[in-house]
Image (cartoon, rainbow, N blue to C red; front, top):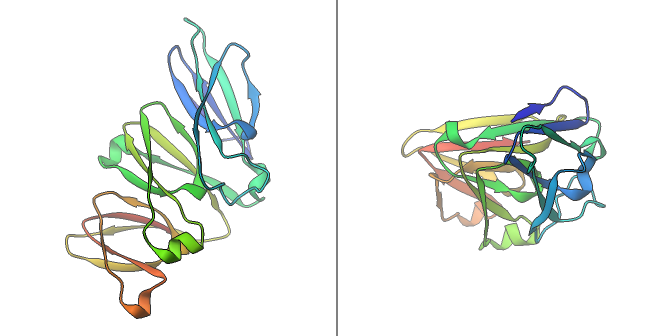
Length: 198
């Protein structure tokens, strides 16, 4: 599979035979007519970047032998400063918990599982997390006007992060019960990585 990020506002996936990619049907601006398309999953919370975007993730798969097929997704409607970032689950060697509002696309090999939110604050701000596992790549859309930071916590290290700033984190991280004064924060305990936007 080839992935092209050099065209502003677009991400193109060139799929070889039997390769596939997940993405929102409403974001597709080009699709080979021979591509197999099927509805994969409906998110319970619509991503924040575009209000018109539907919440259905579709699977796009090349079923034609000896021919590469392309699908192009557009993210220009999510703001002129939007940027694409990707996570390689195979290199991370761990599952990733992602705030679903940042999700853009994922390659074959990625497994999805919606996580029930128990925090009242997270429910009020409409946060929904998904557990992404497997050995594929996950693409997110983030605000290029905000700082994006990767923090690697060592064993026993603790970090309090406001719910609204959490993009994703390693499933190996533990969460700790908050103090009353940190009700709008999530406390993470290492080891593991966390990705924040602020």
